[in-house]
Amino acid sequence: MNDLALVLQNVETFYGKIHALKGVSLEVPKGKIVTLLGSNGAGKTTTLKTISGLIQASAGKIEFYGRDISKEKAHKIVSMGLIHVPEGRRIFKDLAVKENLELGGFTLKDESLRRKRIEHVFEMFPRLKDRQKQIGGTLSGGEQQMLAIGRAMMTDPKLLLLDEPSMGLAPLIVQDIMRIIKQLNSEGTTILLVEQNAKIALKLADYGYVLETGELVMEGDSTELRQDERITKAYLGE
Amino acid sequence: MVNSVGFKDRVTETIKGKKTRVLFLSLLVIIVALLPLGVNNYIEEVMTNTFFYIILALGLNIVIGYAGLVDLGYAAFFAVGAYTTGILMRYGLNFWLTIPIAVIFCVIAGIIIGGPTLRLRSDYLAIVTLGFGEITRITARNLKVTGGASGLVGIQRPTIFGHKLYQITDFYYTFFILVILAIIVSLRIYHSRLGRAWQYIREDEDAAEAMGIDPVKTKLYAYMIGAAFGGVAGAFFAVKMTAISPETFAFTQSAMILLAVILGGMGKIPGAILGAVFLVFFPEIFREIGQMRMLLFGILLVIIMVFRPQGLWPERKS
Image 1 (cartoon, helix red, strand yellow):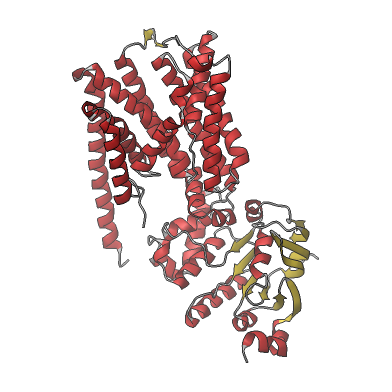
Image 2: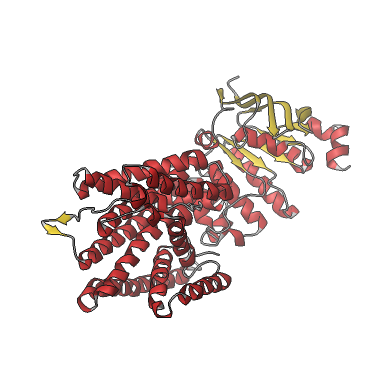
């Protein structure tokens, strides 16, 4: 039990009357990368939003480091060290790069610590350092994704939820982003990665789950999943 | 290192820009401070009225401009402040002591309106605040303690250091000082942690929450602080006019203040000031053409909104 960062037990979520998650159970061990695969509308984003408290689960249990967070408010969950990088990046387009990072450190009360973290993010993403005064909306898609991840790293999270970081990016940039995710993970951040691009996600992850219309249909080590016929047919296009 | 030259230029530029700005501002303050020596009572009255609307516009600017919330019933806070002072003074309380109580009552009113409604989306929030403004006015008209439809009359003039605030010049300076205080408070809040939180919430509430900001609490603070501005302005309004009636706080009053903020440019202190100045000055300057001036005023407002939808002096945007 102790080496699990996140546990979902039979989590159910509704969007109004739509039963979006029909009992999802998954585990994310500490220090690992776990990926959640599935096609459009399978409920991947809903799963992340439910975990981070942006949507309330109607049933089930969500445990973060042994503590039930299914009833907590989103901003409380953030202060526990669980950060959600939402789909479509959602950076502040009217604010400068540095201001976006300052927002990421909003929960930090210590100014010097915030400055130190910004420096660390700049080390990780030199491109952002060059563009720190630039307005977020004028960055390229890849840079915006870097900013979104960098912003999330400001609080030094224990668990990072990444929602489709590869979306809308050129293949070369996707590789960049994946390298960064790998690096974050090797520095000790546990990651739950939601992806449509199963190929790159399985290359990166240790373990994978496959979600279909609100239910988990498959799980396994990523090396196994990569060889599974159903996966290769449905998601890898081979 | 490459852009270090550009950086140096930028630094000197900002310092220079700051210098001219400080010079300009101090000149403006001196002119406004010396103005009563050279003008008649009418202009002093108009200026005092302008100061009054500047304070209200700055207060509403916190709600609308900083936090991005709609409020169509801002006059209600100003009414709560004015009535609190008026009623308490009737019971013999010193004017200066009624101010903190008026502020507290306004903050409570802010919580009452904000608490249950801040989960609403902006258009619904607009309706609720509109209703709140009307409820406050109608309540004031029907309660005994507020003097019913005729309101409160004969509110005492306050004294400060043995000097009774009586003449228009006294109120000119009183409101001028309040304007300066309101500007300082607005500036401090804008650059505070709370100010930044508002900015984030305004831009993208979900993303802000995902970064650990409590949106409901943060928005509630905006209502509370905005209400406090209204309360102070209302308290001073009561002793300046010596009489207040429910119709003073009708919807048109809320609309006026809202107009000042939107016209000037939301979220910007000079914008709110400019908006208030414009709003008070325009009908006064064109007083000679009689009723026509409101028509002209309306047309001008429409033209401004068509060509400068962001306001006369808006916040920096990309």
